[in-house]
Structures are given as structure tokens and as C-alpha cells.
Image (cartoon, rainbow, N blue to C red; front, side, top):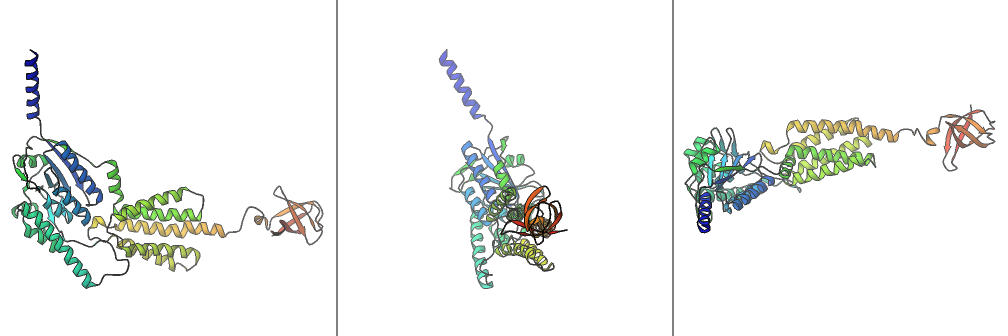
Length: 433
């Protein structure tokens, strides 16, 4: 009886496993391809491999991004032991620049209706600290980068039977096509309206992996598990936004300046330091143009000089122009999403100019103004003689007693006015009223 029960339980367990729903993992990339997106994809591939998922779907809508991040993502997909599908979706999405390379490297490439793909021409990131690169050197370097990109994408295209010639055209001429053109030209494998539709059409397909092994997909009625970015990834993905980086940098600079002009405030210095550290982290991940950064630093110097050296507004105007040009040039990328927006630039320039014109200006004026407390602040004040001045004595001013000296004798109870403070002998010089 026990043996029969054991056999039945084993049979039930085996049947349950055999009929278990297949699992498909999905992640969503919306925005620029940066180091945070790279980390997100890396961890998602590892999770899919560890859980034995049938497929990992990368749903993507991107204008492009950093070449270094794109290369790493391609490498991760090529070395993955789980099939990866790139799905350009939802409707209205695009796979631009780096997105083209990632799509071509995937085992399965699909697009939703009313989407587009293309414009994969490589661009330089970062300025030249020592001066501009001459045109001949720039052309040679660009040719090398372009040829390397072409070789990489052709390798991926030929492995999966995709259109390698169009891929090269997308790189050299920034060609763009719609989803229907992409399907007709064998740039992508499928055009489907939803994730469920994609799983239906790839079910039963045999996928050739990069190690030349083969995987037959079982994705019909699969359980789709969507993995979002962690809170840390979402935080840093926000920080590496060029607009946020620009705001953090100016908040950091202004915070440290406030701390320098008002030592002991602590809060402005701490907040400013944190903002600067986050800004530097963000800029480390962006295609930074050093000329733009130097212009921003120069503008801060001009604003500070305006406070110290009156120039009737000329230094302030120079600072505003330098700050504006600096932020316009700060990020060296043709992708609008990787540039500092004009709304942010205008807001930063106006608020920074007002800060230096008013806030710091008032602080400096306060430092230069006549003292209103202590012994220095008593000059011009009147008091009553408490001990006769002949020539020295004591006077009472605002309820306080001070040693005083007068050029003429003054009796107790008479009124005197402070004309000076003798700091060397710690006494007031007074005159009878």
C-alpha cells in the first residue's frame, strides 16, 4: 500500500513539472542607454538564467546612449545562456543609435506597430582639455570608430540572418525605417502588437545561441514576470539625467559659496558637498565637454569678482553669457535627451545671477557695514558720566559701564557723546555735550 502511494505521488509530481507553465522574464528600458541600464540588463540576464526562464524580453524605447554602455550590453547578450528578445515597444517607440546595435545583437528582434529604428552613426563624447582636435585627426578617428561599429553590427546581423547592409547604412548614413520596412528588409524578425503576440509567434522556434548551441522555445501561455529597476537603480538613473546633473552642480556650488560667506551654517556646506559629489558622479557617466565645464567655472569666477570689484554690471553680464554657453556645450551629444534643456539652462542662469547679485551682495555689504554692537558700535552714542572724567573716569551707555577719557573735565551726571574707541587702552574717547 505504501509503495503504491509512493508511486502515485511521484507520478503526480512528474506530471505537475511536465505541465508547469513556462516562465518568461521581461524588463522595460525607457530612455537613454547608460551605465544604469547596463547594470539593469546584466542583473536581469543573471536572474533569467538562474530561474531557468525560457526567454528574456527587453522591451525598449530609446533614442540611443553611450557607446561604452552599448558595447557592454551587446557583450552580455552574446554571452547569455538564456535567449534574449528585444521588443521595440509600445506603439510610438523607437530604437535609435545604441538601440539599433542592441536590437541586432538579440536572438530575437521584434517591433510593435508604428515604431521606427535607425540613426546609428557614432558620435564623439567629451571635450579635449588641451584644445580642439584638428580636422584630419578627427576624421581619421571617426573613420576608425565607424569601421569598428560596422564590423560589430555586421557580425551580429550575419549570425541571425538579418540585413547587414542596411545596418551599415544606418551607421554610415544614419538611415531610419519604420517597423514594416524593417520586417520587409529582414532587419527584425517580427512585427507584433503585444508581448503575448510575440510569445505566440516564437513558440516552438529553434534559437541558435552565440555558442552555437540550439534552444527550442516553449513560450505559449507562458507566465510573464516583469522585473523593474531597484529603487537604487531608479535613483541613479534619475541622477545621471543631464538636467538633474546640471541642477545638482549649481546647487553644490552655491551651497559651498554660502558656507564660505557664512561660516558655521553647516547645512549649506553639507548639502552643497552632497550635490557636487552626485553631480560629479553623473558627469562621469555622460559625454562631458571640458570646454563647457571650464566656461561654467569661469562664470562663477566672474560672478565672485563682481562682488569684490565693482564693474557696473559688466562682470555679471560676462558671467551670464559664460554660464549659458557652458551649459549649452556641457554635454557633447546630438541626442536631445542627453543634452541640458533650454528650460533648465534658463532657470539656472537666472537664479544663479540673482543669487550673486542679491544674496551674496547683501552678505558682503553686511560685512562691510558699520558695527552696531560691541565697543566699535558705540561711536556716536550718548551716555551719562558715572565717575567724573578728569581726564579719565567711567560713563554709563545703554546700561553698561565703560572706561572713558575726555579732553576736558566732565562732572558726574553730565551727558557725553562717544567720538572714538581707543582699542589699545580699551577705553572710549568722549566729548561733553
